[in-house]
Length: 225
Image (tube, rainbow, N blue to C red; front, side, top):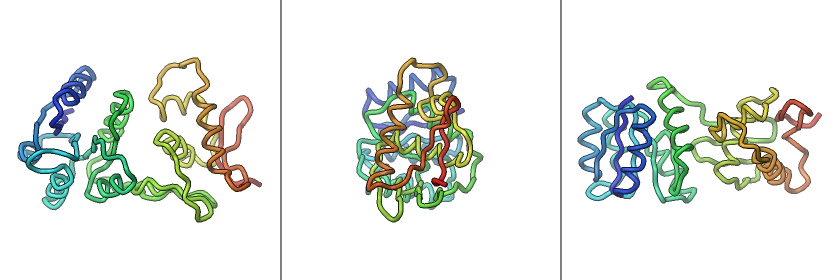
């Protein structure tokens, strides 16, 4: 796949570029927004990785310009702008995903692979729901019984995966592979720790359990019987 990185920080651009090339991708790069826009308009790229704070033309305007020109290439914002409003603004501008610096390359790689697997022009589901719980994927907001639940990025991905498989048993291995992009057992209690934290946040105010342990198998999310 051909990926365009639009990033003015040399260290970040070189680091991401090297990692993607090692993964077998062809990588082009631009150091400012105007150069990036010209390259993106060539239409040869399968994915754009864009910083928001770029010289000459900021990333937000760049993406809006591409979308107004009916460019459907997937866009991943990679930025230090980490506020909820920043993420919402970026996604509403036309980005398909949003990753905040500093970041782990394994997570960037997993997000890149997910975007590249997505058929061009596919309409993604924007809201996931189970009884009493709603996840707005565009705004990255979780609500339970009308109350906003503040989740860390990994907790959000964990909950999203569980809700996408509501009513099904999700194994520890499935979570390691799809939430953490681990294709081996790290021999830690990382899954159990995050499940416990997520439960605590979802159950605040003495709400009933949504995440249920299926002994010897994994976890399942559903409303208490």
